[in-house]
Image 1: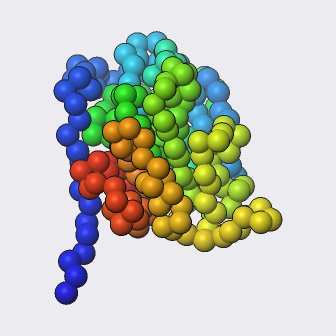
Image 2 (image 1 turned 45 degrees about the vertical axis):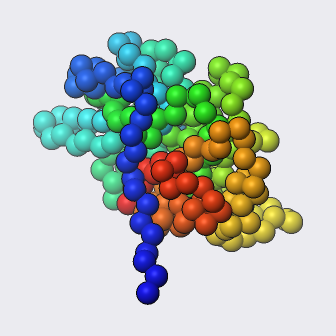
Length: 251
C-alpha cells in the first residue's frame, strides 16, 4: 500500500525575516483610495495606511469591518502590493457568493471608506528576494505571489523567478496585464486558439525543475486545498525537495 504524500504547510524562515509583534498587534485605519477591476469576479482595493511599517512579499494581514450597529467581521487577506509601496497596501479580493466582507467590498465600498487592518502577519510564506523562487498559484492564490513578482521587478533583483498560474479562462486570469516572460498561464476551462486546455500537469512543472538555477528553487504554492495538494505532488515527483516547498492554502 502506497502512503499518501501530505506536504507540510509551515516552514522555518531565516531569522532575519522577522515580523514585528508590536506592529502586528496594532489595529490601524486604512482608507480606500482606489478600486481596480481585475476580472469579472475579482478587484484590487488600494488603501492608504500612513503608519504601515512595511511587509515582506508573501505576508498577509487581518482586516476588520465594523458595521454601524457595532457588528464586527474579520478576515485574513494576502497582501498584493510590494514592500516598496510605502504608506499603501493593496488587496485583491474575489467576490465570494454569500461572503459578507467580500460582498461589501464588491457592492458597497467606495474610495474614502475606511476599514481597520492589523499586520503584517506570518513569515512562513515570505520571500526575502535572496534566492531563486518558483511560484505556483491558482485563482486568487496568485495574490501573494504577485507581491513577490512585483518586489522582484521593483528592486531589479538578479535571482531568477518563474511563475506558473492557473485560471479557468483568460478572462478569469488575475493580473493578466502584468505578466511577462517569467510567467506561464495554464487554463482549465477555455484558452486562446492553440493553447491547450487542462489542469496543471507534470509537463508544466518538469521543465523548470530540469533547468535548476544555482542553489536550486525555493517553491511557493498558493491556492485551494485541492490545488495545493496537486501542485506539491507535481513538484515532488519532478524532484523538488519537500523541505523547499512552502504552501499557503485556503478553502
